[in-house]
Amino acid sequence: MNFRKLLAGWTFRTRRPTYAPGDELTAFVTGHEDGAAKVRIGDTVITLPGVDVALVDRLVRLRVTAFDDADATGRGELIDVVDGD
Image (tube, rainbow, N blue to C red; front, side):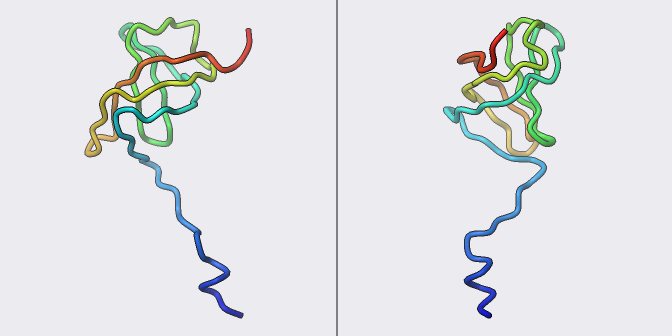
């Protein structure tokens, strides 16, 4: 059996994914602090300033506006709320 062919294309996910400005993501708002929503993807935290606390635990689409690879933190802007309610 050829294991290289079997494992071709496999990659491991990281706990600290990195993003670039302009990347669009779909994720859950996991918290709210100091007037900003927090989206956590693994150990990466993206802050959405000015987003209402009512969106905690809601699925949203966001656009990354700034990201620091070293700290795995960034800022974003809300595009849309994905789930109903």
